[in-house]
Image (cartoon, rainbow, N blue to C red):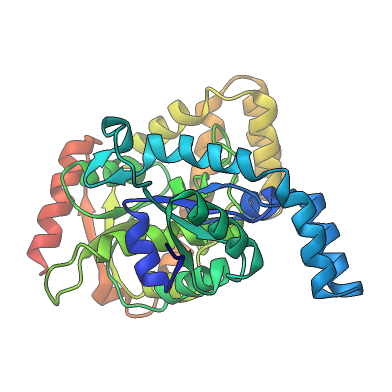
Amino acid sequence: MAVHKILIEEFLQLAKLHSVLDVRSPGEYLHAHIPSACNLPLFSDEERKVVGIAYKQQSRETAIKTGLDYFGSKMRKMVEEVETLVSKTCIYKNESVEKQPALKEKPCVLVHCWRGGMRSAGVAWLLDLYGFKVYTLAGGYKAYRKWVRTQFERAYNLNVLGGYTGSGKTMVLRELSRSGLKVIDLERLANHKGSAFGALGENPQPTQEMFENLLAENLHEITAMTVCNNLEEIFIEDESQRIGLINIPRNFWNQMRKSNLLFLEIPFEERLTSLTEEYGKFEKESLVNAVMRIQKRLGGLETKNAINYLLENKHRECFSILLKYYDKWYEKGLQSRSNLEVLLRRIPCANGEIITNTQKLIDEKTAIQ
């Protein structure tokens, strides 16, 4: 048997069927990783630090010997962890390993470290020795990150869904997805709704690097399905470049700004009702803190009024102030687009019905093709 070193494109193709093992330290993995990968660390964070110091201050040979001291005691446990993992997730001959207990040949596993060096080589050797069919990623996670950045340089057929705050754009996107259309939900990937209130009710945001990995994988998954030369249509919500603490990669965001903008026109009062229902359930302290984050742009008087309304449980009056503020800033960003008169399609949606609005959006898109 032998370990096979493969390039990123083949690695990602095989990753759709087989377990991906990221043998970097837990800290490296938690910072960012290939979305489908499981962490099987060769070294702990502290062990990695010790080996790195030995390499820099002494020699490569000393570092390897130090690493072997850590590796040796973990070999059996690592093999058993991989056996458990692939028994649940790896597909072999289109059937799960659990359904084929009599198979003598072990399933395929994919292994990578940071640069495709000693860590992945060591774990790959062990798993190959035990009987797994092992592939390692040439260039390691570093090669994957290069691939990620490349995805944002590509051309996409984007349909940007616009509308003032409270227009239900996220719900429309989800309905479009249920209708079979291709959708990228940036706010879901970023765990943030985009405004000063966007973190409320959400899980912690991923790191910038992890967000980029998730976005690149989503884009690749959609474009890989294309069966002709035409680019697959992708619906995506209009966003500022910054979503909470996350930045949309500039090249991709610039492409969004130059794409068709389908603008849902929903009356102010309907949007206010939606916003009040969505955010009025949160604790006053959280809402006040969110208002304070925009006080410089909102202005002293309006900030004071908004907070006073919150303290008096007058949520609708508070959100009316905030909604006017966000409408103003969205309109300013809208008008800063170049060639807006060509890209913009306004779609009146007076009743707030998600299914109706979605169909109007699809009809409008069909009409301009």
